[in-house]
Image (cartoon, helix red, strand yellow):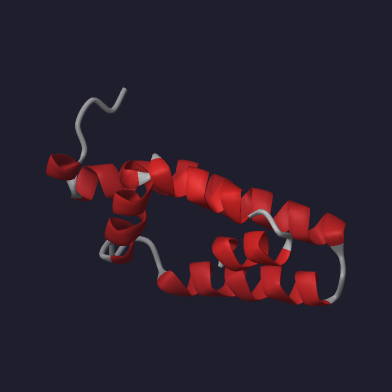
Length: 92
């Protein structure tokens, strides 16, 4: 979804830059799906809310929702790290 927003805003170079160093983030995102302690419906609802705010042209709400969505990883990361400890090294 981020890629589409960056394309829409003519900022594809930012997406390319992010992809170039986001291996650990992508690993986390994929493994998060397999952590039964973390429901997928929360992610899908957050994505819906972001799209709705975007289509409503509510920039402040988009900012708040994206910020909250990106920070969700910080509150959930320990669960993923505990479930898949062999997939991550040098975490500390």
